[in-house]
Image (cartoon, rainbow, N blue to C red):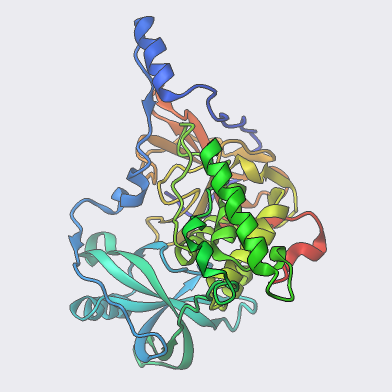
Length: 432
């Protein structure tokens, strides 16, 4: 896909399709009864493979885990406009020879480098953030003279830069401290009545239908928690605000509207609070500074509280330049098993974090034929989309190349092109 360069056009685009009202199985059954060809559901596992980088990438095996609190010497790869979080996939296409040489050396060792955000507050003097995430290369292709040096890397652990030094070839090496994850224990664990432990059960996932038996277990557990809280100076609802399982359940409830592709199937979210907190940070269209704030938080409970505060107040997505409303936040859906927002790279090596939406408004497509070249979603052609009012590059409109493909069309919006509007201005900085 092409980058941000395009020509002006005044042709307005139509809105994308909304989610279907029938399940895939019922559609197939009705199509078979009528003798029609059943619809084709998009394979949401395809975008994760990043096949547009080629199919002949070499795989690196093994996993590198750095000790928490340890000091490591890492090569840094600055990323403008990308704040990598643990668990996030980072595809890259590199052309600069010194950087390619650095990546080749990394692959022969442990395959790990530091991905760090490059601030452009002052165009004449960009500076590095003081916190980043280690990235581990798991696939690569060394064809620099043809299509660049391609890699796929996965975010692993947070780090803080202690000291950095630019080398003669322009690459940056830094001494970093690996930041630990502080998992806080249940605040009522030490004062609980141990004789009631056999009645304690896991929290019921409130984002799914609850059976009568599960509801009884949940009510019993809540009664036990209230009794435990009576042994402290705080009421039970205060303790509940810092309970990892309770926070995870509330976050999942806020995200229950997310569906996988055009099916009514909900996303399978991580159960572990640490993984869930990073998944939400990756999936939400946050500003770069907000993501950096999340990376500085060492506790998954505090991250979930911050994210829950934003999710409860997130109303709409607007153009980052003219503030025109682009879409309702709940128009987001997942064209990838990784979530509604994915990270992709274009042939020029520019990385885009793209949010997929059913519908959008205030956008227009360029007056050109849709292209399937280098499409991030196999089976879909893309057309560059811009803001109708300020002509800012907003992303792309994707249309299916087959009439039976579901969904027939959707929008892919660049994260850096939009801002999230909350209920009130004072909620822009949620209280942790």
